[in-house]
Image (tube, rainbow, N blue to C red; front, side, top):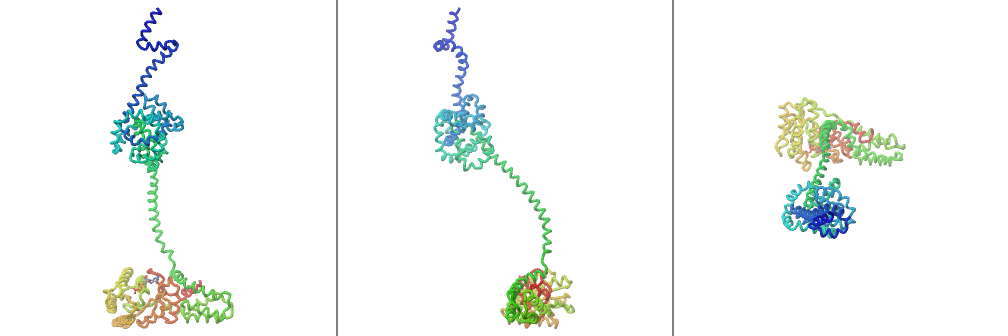
Length: 609
Ligand SMILES: Nc1nc2c(ncn2[C@@H]2O[C@H](COP(=O)(O)OP(=O)(O)OP(=O)(O)O)[C@@H](O)[C@H]2O)c(=O)[nH]1
């Protein structure tokens, strides 16, 4: 029976593997093991072939997809990735997976980051790199992206067709061996890589490599921003390597793209943080509300406005500081004697107070303190008292005789001294007091003067009588007087020109105006006001002299006392001409016309509280 069995058994093997088995047969024990192993081995052997074919097929397929094209341009970058792929070597175990590309690839991408340390396994990695790439493609979800790259890469489209033919198959097998060799090249490649990467925004795919690190969303998020600069160098190498090497990467490219997408998305989230601006709108609305509430609060600003006296005092501060400072310099540790009195007289004269007032002050001091120690305070006190004595007689209020309908006020003065402005301020006071006022634009030589007066008329609700530019000022004054009479105006204020350049013409014009007004009322003009610019200095004395003689000035308004160092001239004018000073101007606003006070002015200029 045993021999029979052997024959049969031998038969069976002969037909199959008998002879080989026979050789090995000598090893009986092995037969059993081999038999067991052979069964699986046989099966495995077949799969191995399949593996070879499959990878090729996959490679072909992948290439066919089109990425091979993309990869083709990227080959250089691929080289760089190769080094990175080395790390991927760990994924090499994946080769076992080839049959199941999808599952393995997924792990591979994850493993890649870790494998980095493995570079020591150059040989394996070189060959393996391809598989790792393959695993990356595993993220099949990206295959969807594969189509996207195609559209996105219209330019590349042409190259794709070329490679598709080449490829896939042939390149795939070769790459492993070549790639490893090229891996060193990566270093050289870097330079070319940048350009390729740029053109191939697909290379964007390159950044895709980073997609692998996708798990590192944060890093990638940052990279996308820098890609423009960095992308070409570091990033591209890793990504491109997989692409070129492994047609399979074809799938990878897709994932890579997805990554870029992620990158893009990442930035989007950033804009999301922009919602920070959201608070901005909130703030805006808040600010608006605040502003609205604050605005009304600003209205009260006028409240803090300084009083006219404070403004005058501040205005005279320059005059006062200079004067008192000089006085202090004269009386520091000195007794009052002839020399100190002479020095004091010089100081007072330089302060525009005038010789007469200066002598009054020095005489007063000598009479009471001669030979005694005198402080600058003592001197200023005496000065304030003497100045007040000089000013008191001229500090008179403006009186209007309303028995005249209208009471005519003729305003004269050199151009720019404040005639029109003073007329406006005065009209405001009168109308505020319930008087009806009419204005006449007698300065027919300046259109601006006419317009300025109209503005003041509108502001004070006072009719303004004006004529064409260059018209006869006397004729205008006459017409205005008649109209004011007809209107029953309480007050008629007539503006005039003040051209001193042609003194003769000016004199003729003013005399004519006065004469014409007298035809309607022999006593008109009832008041002739001259505006004197306090900043003029000693020349103001001459101006008053001229207009007093030409127009019969009988009252003064000292303007611009709110900012001059020469306020002392008012004292000199008062002492010399003894003309009433009705008002002082301390600003350009409508209420910056104040009745003149001798004591306040004296104390202000002397620096006495
Ligand atoms: N600081 C200050 N400026 C004043 C004062 N009075 C007038 N002004 C300014 O002085 C300038 C001349 O004032 P006007 O009223 O035009 O003088 P005017 O004498 O009418 O001049 P003409 O129209 O050329 O004849 C204007 O800018 C006024 O705002 C004042 O008391 N203080």
